[in-house]
Image 1 (cartoon, rainbow, N blue to C red):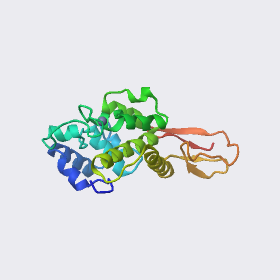
Image 2: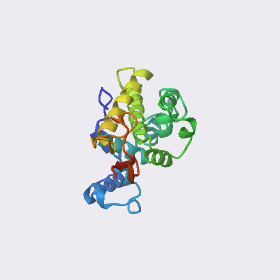
Image 3: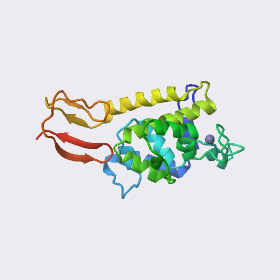
Image 4: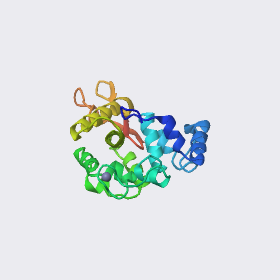
Length: 223
Ligand SMILES: [Zn+2]
């Protein structure tokens, strides 16, 4: 990790096992658009409408391959699996990204409820959230709780909840602006969907749901 808490991807790549690397390379060689869930069960990750860096984080999380202390301990790279921040017995993926108390506080601050934070299966938790209408908010928080963890454990700065919340909101705004489905307004102008940017110039015509984007909600066209 670099001093700004960004990732050294070349180093992360060296941590992956050979079969994971091969699997990843095959996905890229074959092309994502040719793959279906029943052929590669996690190919949906690469179709999420978000930055590549966030997709890659999710891909690593789903392979239990982000370098938490638990991960590093199991590979002989750390003397203890304990969480360096709170002393919990194991810094697992879920502890790191969700159950560490300040991380939980962030999830709650952005409107996620306790019922959204109870799933103990990483795959199900992430898949359900990505498929929900809160996908972008989920991705923004996930990205920054990981960056926050790295900064606290390895970095040189101390970020408070408010600062991390600002980063999350900024990333969320970007995601909505660049990746949300477009919605036609009364004037026919296409604007980004999502709660942050949906502003109608005036009362819209009845809109016809055209299709359902599995991760990001409906896309509408005027009748
Ligand atoms: Zn902890």
